[in-house]
Image (cartoon, rainbow, N blue to C red):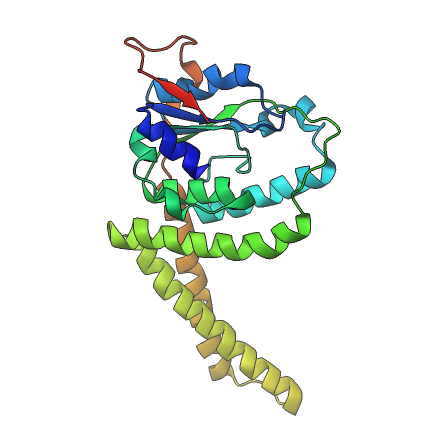
Length: 263
């Protein structure tokens, strides 16, 4: 995919479309997929299967449950709280954003689309969900649920930390970073200090003193509140596609953009 993206940039494409070759994506839907980009209400658009309940029922049950769980984790890691179906590989991206991505750093394998979203948030790119059905036949997915459960959480955690650093620390110091730093420190201190004395009291069959409980509870509660406030601010700061996306005309804008290349 990184090689394909570079080739599209070298060819001078204004918009690059990624359509997987597994037969689950209909090339006839490319027009709707790129519409938000043509009208410049978003810089990145992706298909979303969760807006089509009839077709969604054809998705294998294990994959459907996994997608729902991964969607929530990806909202937390990527900062795009308004999107659904992050694993959807039917995507389109504008040249000006694609050229800013470090293509050599993009994750390989099934984490590719997730890593794209995390890195796009650091660039404050607007992402649009485009309702598009997927088609499922009798093919077997090579995506192992066990591999996802073991590998994805650590990658999401690392990606989330990288996103917070670049967006809320490096480019502009934000209250989100301050709340996360102090909130994490207070929360962990309260949890570890309180947990230690709680276990010690159980082992020695001695009640924990009131002062010890207060020393553990106050930073724990305050840290939790700071973390919650950081989460609220992150949701509010999420880059969002223009609200006009649902009323866009079906045709291209005038004048139309130059070229669209599919990979």
